[in-house]
Length: 167
Image 1 (tube, rainbow, N blue to C red):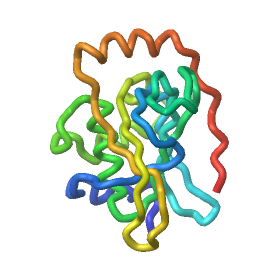
Image 2 (tube, one colour; image 1 turned 45 degrees about the vertical axis):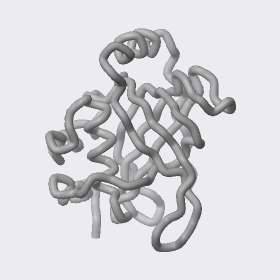
Image 3 (cartoon, rainbow, N blue to C red; image 1 turned 90 degrees about the vertical axis):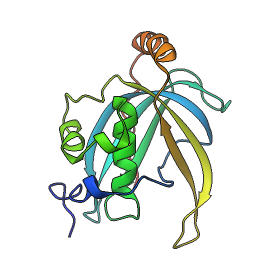
Image 4 (tube, helix red, strand yellow; image 1 turned 120 degrees about the vertical axis):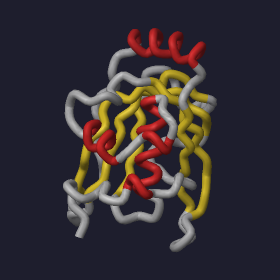
């Protein structure tokens, strides 16, 4: 059974991610990470949630300052790789250099992800097993010349209210 203590046990060996993620709608978004924390649902399945503030989006439904979130559940195919890819891009390091220890370091109220700015491309895809349509995501660090200006802008945007997670 997976728990918060063992949910990243194989992260160092995880293959790079394909697709995954929840709650953000289609489009390319530049977001600030406001929180990254563990969450266990009513069925006792652990996972992680990233609470985000949207700074810019190609989706006209979003405006600067809107909240967003990204959820990953332990035990899903590609879970550890997606979490590791998210962390690597947020921290601006190669995927291979970002390990399980860094993921656990981020799972506390004062963590290295808070306030970081990153880009995410969200797109419709279908799950391999159940053939359900979901929104997949690809995280990308911003080029250094863009990162500085977006980070400065992010500091002027109020933190979005925490999102109520529905199971």
